[in-house]
Length: 223
Ligand code: FES
Ligand code: FES
Image (cartoon, rainbow, N blue to C red):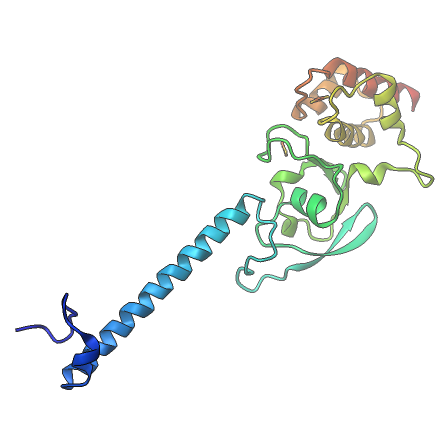
């Protein structure tokens, strides 16, 4: 005898529904199956959507907010308060580049190894790719764009990097410069070894390390 709750191959739920009371249970079972199928299908779509947008570092505003976290932040960037909608898993590098248009901050490895994304947070050189924007709070963020003088002139450190022919491809340069800013603000007269140590977290694939060190020493001597 068939279990009335189980749907067997060949059964016709529509025909049986018109019959006994047991068919009502069958209808309920089939409906529940359809419901579960729907949930699984929608979960798969949500999962693939997360994967797709995760490739952009979680920068899509299509993703739902997690919990009750406040997404609209007021960030202090280069001395200005910027209101920005930030996802819970968004890094500072993604916010700066793709929400605020500050593309001077570069993304190299995107995992805390190369230093291309270096910015200053309260004066401390920081990998923006490894910092959640929600963790920044009201701290002051400085990017390479914030070094520009009132009339668009270069910062003395930028000028020294040019004078010493520091940049080759230039991809690492803004990170090297921001680290140098942090160094010279903390120690205006570093030795070459101290400068080398300070810049050790900034990799240069072009191998322009000596040029960069010459730049740091030049601006330190000129100060
Ligand atoms: Fe941040 Fe490489 S991009 S450390
Ligand atoms: Fe090319 Fe440093 S100048 S990576």
